[in-house]
Amino acid sequence: GQPVVIDNRPGANSNIGYEAAARAAPDGYTMLFAVAGLVTNPHLYKLPWDPLKDFAPVAQLNSLQIMLVANPKFAPASLADVMSYARANPGKVRCAWGGSVLMQLACEVLRRDGEIDITVVPYKGSAPAMNDLVGGQVELMIDVLNTAIPQVKAGRARPVALTNSTRGKQPFPDLAVMSEAVPGFEMLTWQGIVVPSGTPREIVVRLNREVNAVSSSPDVSQRILESGLEVVTTTPEAFGELMQRDYVKYGQIIRAANIKVD
Image (tube, rainbow, N blue to C red; front, top):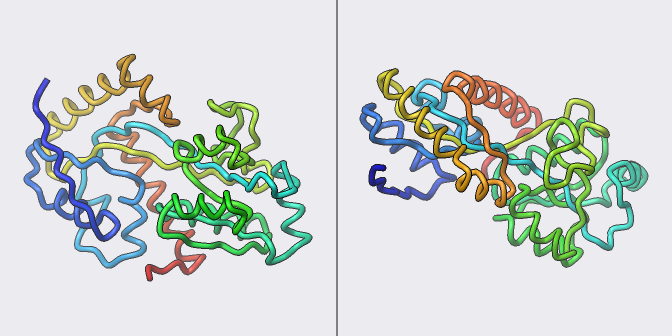
């Protein structure tokens, strides 16, 4: 019921916007719409802010599955077939990623923990990566569900597996999950609201209540679901625990894979 000004601060993989929010007055009137990059960027850049110290979590908004898709002409159809083919043909399978560093991490975990010799191919965005998948320049691609779905529905990409922990998630409840081939594999991205640290507790609680009410309202939740996201309503504490877990988890993967920013 209040006017909201959207202040887009693009650049430096969102670090410009993150820093502006971190330095804002902790009065509840500046909120940051955050994605998982908030907890991965500090492992890739030297930054003047800390995601766990300079921000107070308010509410997770949603969870977004990541999908492994294949070029329709790539012969191995199932996850098991893809893994077997990759083991029998070291270095001949290419896994594309673009946009979010989480897509690169998913490819790296598939390569490392799946013990397969695949080539991880970076792109400047999801669109050019998908174009090369459709064109057959690469065999596999890791992408977020909401951008992969249109290509799957059009028959230009074939779903292979999801990165959540168990089967049964819509809109592909029968599709394999990566943990069936790579034990322990689970990687989901998210969006949420945080505010500058030091924001009074009563304001954080009020914002959490209002954000959850909007997210769970029928019209908004339906639009979120149609976009391929899963609505999540949490306490500030639960969202903070998720941020802490992902900060540690993804930092370990980045260091193990020696991922650097070019």
